[in-house]
Length: 197
Image 1 (cartoon, helix red, strand yellow):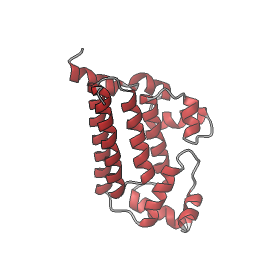
Image 2 (cartoon, rainbow, N blue to C red):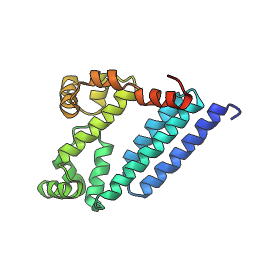
Image 3 (cartoon, rainbow, N blue to C red):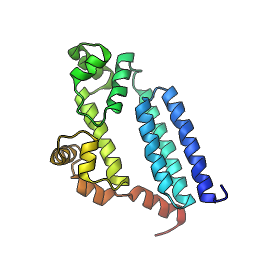
Image 4 (cartoon, rainbow, N blue to C red):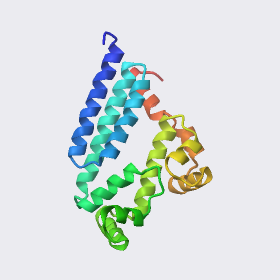
């Protein structure tokens, strides 16, 4: 593109596609990798300056790298657990149960629960909850989605249930989290890069 901002945007999106592919090849569940990639592509698409795109480029690279590093620190999970993780990411908008997961991978629910805890260091329920809350945090910080939308997208029974769970996990309500965090990382890093105060 003759437009420098658009040209840089294209380069970053191509880079994200390559990183996503490499991470999947390295063991990151496909649904997680694509969701993470889509998240940054939407932010890059909305950015209006090269400085903003550069910040997002760095954030995306560090984010993917940290997640791959954390995966490497843990014992490589077995095939059933890898399938379970992928199922969880694919059905993030649903209320997934251990029984449902066990059926999907052909294991006894009790055995799957023990295996998951041994390899992942937490219960299936806690893992699913953590992933949903982390996704909610990203949407609260970087999108205009309402609490009702987030609640529905993440499979909570109601908005009040989402608020209750979010508050218990983070120590603050979704409203307070958005008020304090809404695009703060992007703006503060932009000020550092551009010298603004």
